Image (cartoon, rainbow, N blue to C red; front, side, top):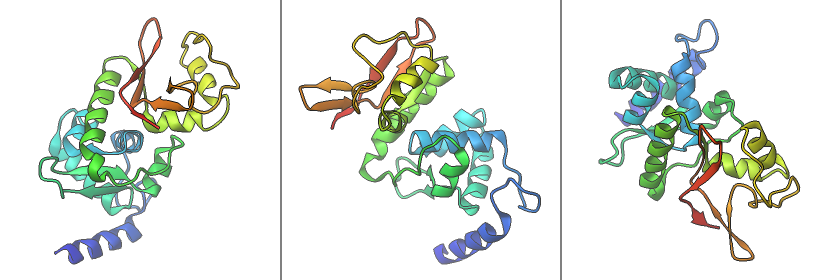
Length: 205
């Protein structure tokens, strides 16, 4: 059955396109694109998380749209871990269409529980008015000198003492630990007011 499914999915992928052009066989919706952004930013989502974040909790609606995006080559889908049930993450094609400047995440592997817990927290915070940067977004911002400071300015965050535009990688959004190590946060959360950034969780790198 797996071989039959893959053959069918590949045939549909060749003929249905990405859902953005006439003749694709389906039309990508705002909810679909929201899922692509979330799955790229947070690396992995369960079907239930996708349903609640993008389709008002309607599991069957999420299941149908995920199937279309898998067949179009925008999402990877796995049900290999029983407790997580169905999980999804973006392909390179899906990440490119998400349009947020991030590459496709790696398959979740042993970090699945951690990824899903972080996604749960981030999605809940965003739904309640907080601005959230995922760890992937933090790394991308810190990779370019001055970009992290520009990002904080764009988010109307008060200037953080000791942070300058020429700060080295990891000195703006990560937390220094000793002389040569930083603590990369799982999330950077900006309150609705007074707009102070809060680093949440993370690991030493």
